[in-house]
Image (cartoon, rainbow, N blue to C red; front, side, top):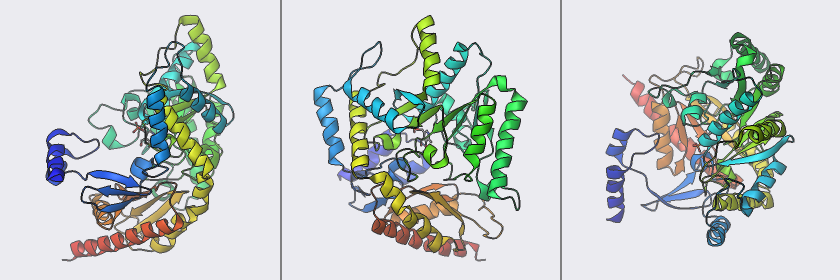
Length: 459
Ligand code: PLP
């Protein structure tokens, strides 16, 4: 039948991103045919709660007609035009204006790109251009953190701090340095408080800058709350301390808000949650609820003025994409942001966050398989451990989480397994009752997994 043939044709023709290809040949695809609200449906008609909002991104959930209509209207009016060489279009202009309004003071210009990876590559090129223009070409090194996720292109992949995205690709490039991930549960010293841990990591950053030479270090990039590396909120004072070190050494700060931005943490941006004043903010995902590919960089006036002066001197700022400022993508983003505002979805996320955060903690923190429950707003992680008291990881890592992930799917809940951590990141439109459904389904899958672990441990 049709669905069988799609399964066969998928395996015959598609190489999937981030997917074990041989395992995929054996098990075939899960084909999603439609979605509505927080649910998606597979080709067998089975419904799932999309507990990760697609790839951390479908803020408005599925089937939002106003986004489809905004795209159709723009397709008919002007399906495409570029923004090179002084050309422009109304949706790109309006969206840029809106983003400057929404983002922290001091960020005054917008550059559009198509994906988070491209946006991060673009930021690094802007930073290199900026330091060349200022006559300090040696100031080029970029610092990020272990377990960071900033994308997979050559530069973004160099800033990402996950082995899977670097081994076998000769990454990171030289000049891309990594610091300790600010995850207290795994990386604090015995007895070290959150506050002392944050101080130690800021000291680590300063020591790295001094060792390398401040005249060679250009920027620090981080997700306010690290997501794809395993959902790891930093200690409360971490960012203030990091920011002070960066300022001391004239190191620019890039906030990668690709997942945090537009209400994920219950605040407009992660920078609002942690009091960060960045030189660049990188946006994507919830910017369009992923209905269209789009990303944006919002940059400071200081950086803009240097770029503008320099391009006046030497010619154009030589960077941009065919689809930079795409009118359909930007029109969809505008409508998406209008809906987020009209429905008060950022305040809604803050208001119902306790249902997810306290719900996960009260129901599962004491479970023998659970090492840590963590999260902020509507993003959370549950880390599984082999030995709760000793925080021992499973050996090999990932198997139990993969099993739990499969069981959750069986129970009608799509999550993400990141090594031994299960990640939760539901659409912002989710209700408290629907969060209750996520907790129930997760609980069932967790019990299944515990039974499975005990069977495996039995002699
Ligand atoms: N930055 C962050 C924080 C991300 O989470 C991601 C993707 O998950 C990216 C950048 C890369 O975005 P893309 O997959 O659109 O290239």
